[in-house]
Image 1 (cartoon, rainbow, N blue to C red):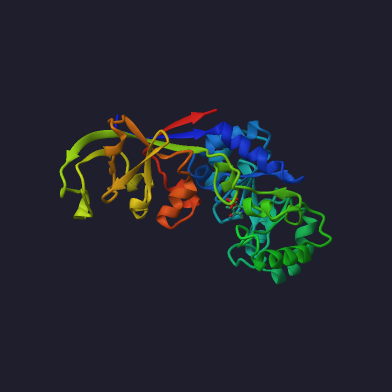
Image 2 (tube, rainbow, N blue to C red; image 1 turned 135 degrees about the vertical axis):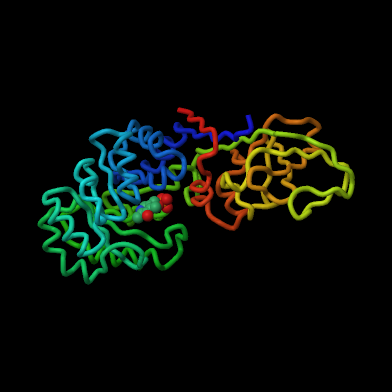
Length: 344
Ligand SMILES: *Cc1c(COP(=O)(O)O)cnc(C)c1O
């Protein structure tokens, strides 16, 4: 079989959630947007719910519908994009909770679904989503009477603990929520690690659950193993792959493995990435193709059946560094071609 295997360790996912939960005295929710950071929202969501998670966050209402199908009634499913036009029936029928981002969304919500749960998202400086403080000040009395289930904001620089933006946003968030009779939430993974001042009533970790930076103590959750399709011997001077970018300087044994950039193994990772046989690293040689990668296995002294690319040694963050990106992008780019194996 020439299909790579993506193993998803649900027990490690749950341990990461528990470790982040232990860092605050707040309620710890779970962010499972983008199909559970690419790892499968239904399996990820069910494991976390079984471990005691009662609040989930997704980006869009459709994602909330997939999650509700997996969880059944009970756990709260919050929608970051709020109450978009066309989503009213789904929000109602599936008991989803929109995080309202504007006066238009607030009007749409209270007029179409009076009495239905909602939260408020306030922009404290990131300028991405949420009401501006002045807009919120004008609406606060009306909104408060409707009893929002949560008032939240999001930090722009939480993965840099010394960045002055953190304290700046904290100050604004405290000012605009002072005296409010509603639960408050500011921290994602990075915010949890900034300490108790940032925790408020609910924390919203995402990437740390899936084993990514900035949660340095996270256990890896995703591993990728790729079958070897073919091995061959090269003489000095022969080349490998598109555009002849690699030339053999010694007699070389090359393995061709069955995954490539269509599986989220970005072309930009190039030769900064290793491929692993157990804990032995083998260099990637030549360009990464859509479905194949060349590997120098000369020093292994054997032809392996498969090689690892996302391993305990080469985590999503190491791969991300090789491509000049972040672990979030590696996880959410893995795609649908893998044979997925869930370990619980
Ligand atoms: C994605 C997201 C989170 C989770 O962030 P992580 O850095 O993955 O922990 C929390 N809140 C909001 C608003 C988000 O968009």
